[in-house]
Image (cartoon, rainbow, N blue to C red; front, side):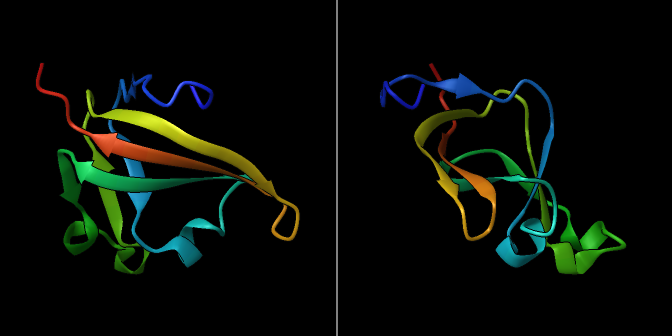
Length: 89
């Protein structure tokens, strides 16, 4: 999909993410960086025991485009840039 900037994928399940990049970088070796244009997302931070994580929930069916895939050797992480957009048609 990164080679075709018009191709869309979609989340098939509820997907947890964080608005706090520093906190997100503490986990795993891949970081999804999401630019939200229009999407159904719920802010869970007021309900969470870990409110500093600034957790949000992306609902199933939200579409995305892969804008770029890069590897950052300084952080030893893959950086995948997604653009989220709810599609209604």
